[in-house]
Amino acid sequence: MRKLWGGVFQSGTSSLADRFGQSIETDLQFWQEDIAASVAHVHMLAKTGILTAGEAKKIEKGLEQIHEEGPEKLPRDVEDIHTAVESRLAELIGETALKLHTGRSRNDQVATDARLYFHNNLLHVLDRIKALQAEIVSQADLHLDDLMPGYTHGQHAQPITLGYWMLAHFWPLQRNGWRLEKAAALSNYSPLGSAALAGTSLPIDRFLTSRELGFSAPIPSALDATSDRSWVLDGLHCLALCMIDLSRLCQELALFSGHEYGFVKLSDEVTTGSSIMPQKRNPDFAELIRGRTSQAISYWVNVASMMKGLPLGYNRDTQDDKPPLFASLELVEDSLNLCTQMLAGCDWQAEKMKAAVHGDFSTATDLADGMAMAGIPFRKAHELTGRVVKALINEGKTLEDLDSESLQRLVPEAPASALKNLLPEDSVKARESYGGPGPKAIKEQLIHAQQLLKMAGFAQVL
Image: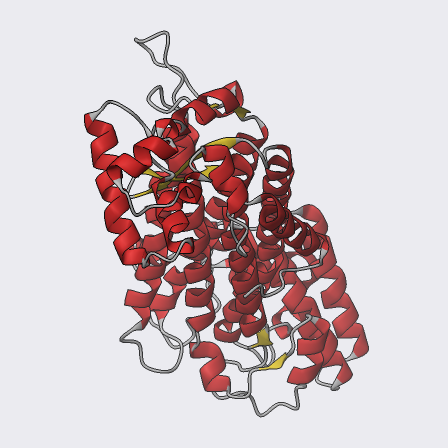
């Protein structure tokens, strides 16, 4: 196996050690970032006079050829991507390639490459969040008035609308986008030029490479720069939170598509059948997102557990920070795309949802509110409403059957005005408090979401 070290060693590592320590297959995911960082480094070496203009031009031309060739031409009998690029460069331009590594170490190289990869791929995730938000806003606008049950503890609680339910999933995505942008900003500092841990005696310019690569600034401490993986944990944490919110959406879609609910039919594109039961339409991909959310959570735990005992300075343990980060980014992007597909193909059964609300006693709070508006203390009104509900259940009736005569019989102190919002439609229309499902409140929320969707990036909403 080709290595960038070994002069002091009398023999090489064993084949098992080589296989165990090799990271080239993982590293190939950021081969382009490694080349970009190398080009910036070469530009700096030329401008500071460490390399001649001719040497820098020759190295840059070789790196450009490697980029044009693609990763297929990079050797695999190497430890990592840095060795692969340098080895291929030597094949193309000869001994001048050996000057590429002047003033840097693999320690600052890998930290730089990984940060660049995170930024580049995070842009795709942020775009996918926006796309899912756009689908949610579109669906919410279509279904602002479609009644459905609202749930707490898995039980019917109060009437809401499908549009209201949809928009409730918009805001977690907004927070996730905002968090990920902040994670990107926190990680946008350059380790390049920190070398192994203590910088270099060569007259390098870390600010120059930082600017060329789009970083905000170089990390002030070379020791911290090569040690820090907190930005990986920030990213994994935010990505896991995003998956948790997607999992909750998928759980509801899986439930709502079941026969017991019958609120929605998921499209053929995002469901599968059974090998033995021909009638089945399984929400497999909603279930897979729900299940793989545990992977995203475990990735954070994996890296956090790895980092907790490491002293300052590069440690080989951190070679294993990248597979969880790469996997989490891919998982979240795929899951966002699938959730967008699922919602776009939903066939909502409006009449079934509306029927589920009637007769479920979910307007009981409206009866208590009506009594409270008439001057009865709410705690007393709550108790009286409970008495009414119990009596109606015993009589085989629902709150929609309650009239002023029955109310006077059951609760003499309750005014007839308390009956005002007992129909689910009226209950929803009455809930105009900020954030509620009433026509004015939900329209205000929809406009707010539409405005945020048009903005570049993710504004803080709270």
